[in-house]
Length: 63
Image (cartoon, rainbow, N blue to C red; front, top):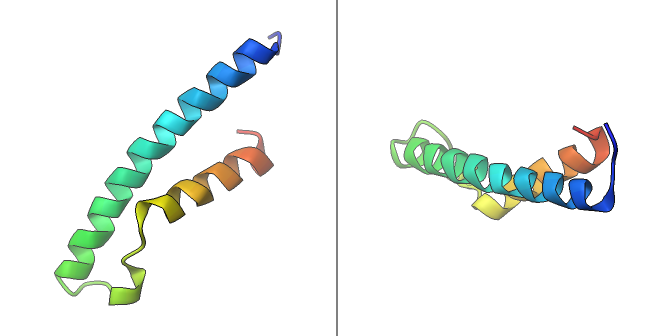
């Protein structure tokens, strides 16, 4: 597999799109569980924190 600048940029944008979907779904799940009192209120994390964690994992794990 050849890693050109274009393929790296495309791969990164695909990952960011995936991260947005995952963050939205996790955010909805967390908010629903906090609303039902199954999780403590401080776990009602905004989606951008989830995206930040996914990006850090992607960058340092070279997924």
